[in-house]
Amino acid sequence: AQRVTQPEKLLSVFKGAPVELKCNYSYSGSPELFWYVQYSRQRLQLLLRHISRESIKGFTADLNKGETSFHLKKPFAQEEDSAMYYCALFPPGNTPLVFGKGTRLSVIA
Amino acid sequence: DAGVTQSPTHLIKTRGQHVTLRCSPISGHKSVSWYQQVLGQGPQFIFQYYEKEERGRGNFPDRFSARQFPNYSSELNVNALLLGDSALYLCASSLDRVGTGELFFGEGSRLTVL
Image (cartoon, rainbow over all chains, first blue to last red; front, side, top):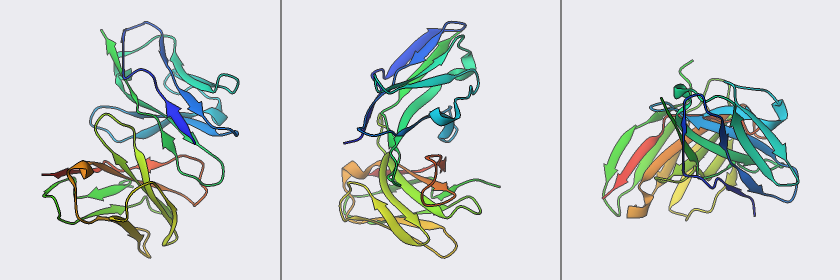
């Protein structure tokens, strides 16, 4: 069965410190992985996807198939990064997105 | 473009009642998906509709049903409400059936069942 695990419910870091939000997935094939973000009082929105290999708002994520991980990283956290982050898996074949339970990132000034 | 719009934003029902939630996708998007988000959990897939046909169904009881209209808007219906149905119901649209995993979400309808 497809599963996404985000081991941390809450992650607090100081402004300027590095951030790593962990995501592990369970899937036998080659899925697409995504990070979605929800800022306070805003709707859930796509942050980045692994196939793009791009940096969005300073965040990057590398798919590690050996470790089945897709951790989200940012070298220097900003207060505006405080939000709820969801890792999501998109298996091929038009099956729906499978979300993790989410990690709340709190950046302390 | 207003994005995905959902109504109502909040509603309170009692056990045993029925509820209808509505969703209008982004203009040009033909696929609508419904997700349930219980407090402290990630969104859980309920249904996907594309071109007015059900294309996917999550692990939810038959009390949950949905439909998509010719203008691609959608309704989610839940019968015989239980306390456990209290949640944020999210609608998301995408351009086509297969999609790329990129969903555009509405702000949700928060249902409280008393």
